[in-house]
Image 1 (cartoon, rainbow, N blue to C red):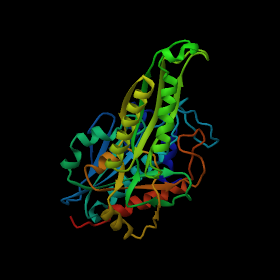
Image 2 (image 1 turned 180 degrees about the vertical axis):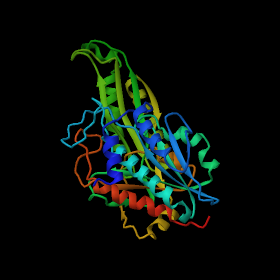
Image 3 (image 1 turned 45 degrees about the horizontal axis):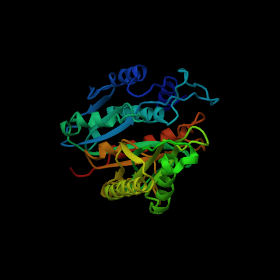
Image 4 (image 1 turned 90 degrees about the vertical axis):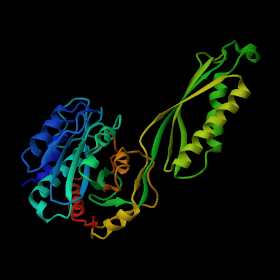
Length: 365
């Protein structure tokens, strides 16, 4: 017999939807939540939460993201995506399944729990940061949320292995776009022009030499586009990359290094170098004291030595309350966001055990 958490996952895997446009997913989640003895609310567009009142002064919150990716599934699993060109390739179907099963547990055991419980189902983690409008709704202050937890399916670990660390866990992300404007001339008269291709090359190569060799900060470029033909000095260039770090000081230092290097290249080449930054998510920083308390629950947790450079908008919740984010091993090598991504469904039971244990953590508030 299929367990509820596995069935939830299989149902949700077949109806992947994108961003804030989640009609079938929301209907599935809401229909289930309305069968439970909790307060169902919609704090922001395309989001839904359920509050279980234990009669306590404080609340513990859990978050599950709901959106999928614009990817065509190529797995052979039973119950593949029914939506062409859309796939749960990042495990959010599993996150929702564990959250729904957690709601089932809490609804039956609320009288035994030391805190109220708030379970958040969030849209648009993959795109524009669906966590931010939920936080802006004031829901954390409304229910006096004192701690918040989330988890993510993660390749490279055994199925159900729980992995985390105190302090920095996932990076602050910022997309970098550089527009370089030069002067196009025939290459025989290159001295009369301003070479945008050269400017772009200098910017990329100098930053590669100057960015600190530090696993906790990164400024790299994946795109340099310039020129039209081989005998014309390029009049324009586009450079694009990403800036990632785990501290505000490192973030600002990298931006300053980028700005100073761009000014230097401008002076040397005569080109205009315009930098634009698109802010991403803040860094996920696990509360060290809360992490220590979590380890007292008896759930085995593998502590990462170095955090990955990927980003996650769970960080917005950690600005509202102390929080800890976890990885749950998939038991498979398939990369996140790949067409073959899948996970051993035994991992769901392991993640659910962790979530249930967290509802019993008495922080004395």
